Image 1 (cartoon, rainbow, N blue to C red):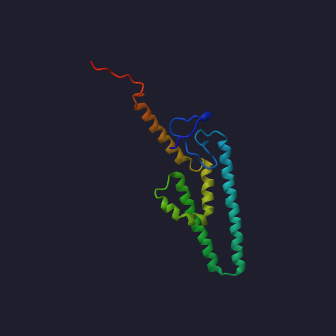
Image 2: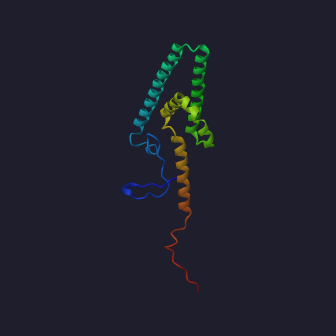
Image 3: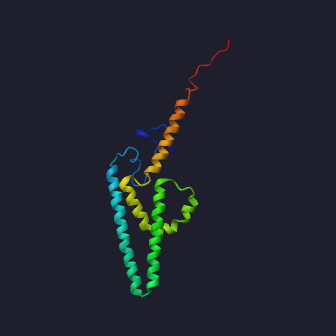
Length: 168
């Protein structure tokens, strides 16, 4: 965990929480208008998903006007449905744990881009419960705090302050 600065510019001891998109570090104590931010993220992601569906509907109407045929129309709808389902699942898994293989996640980036509606919907659903990604960061932060506390309690003190023992 990175070490940050505390109040008044002093470096705070121990691990520092990782900032979360749209929330910063307000997710730690649920302060700084955390609830309002969650409502905003939920509303924004749902509005973006609805707007995206409207834009896709216009694109689909364009295919119908072009007279490309039913088979292509079905393939386009099927492609967006499958990609959105996969994007929803992978985005949801990303909220529960960090990816085991980041290379695989990079290879799915194109598929998740096509299925962006699924990612937006996963973001909306998760923001109803907590800040998206908060669970993973909270687990990592609490683990780091526990390790730090254990290291601090097992120390015997500052060796520079110890008095040297003289041998008789």
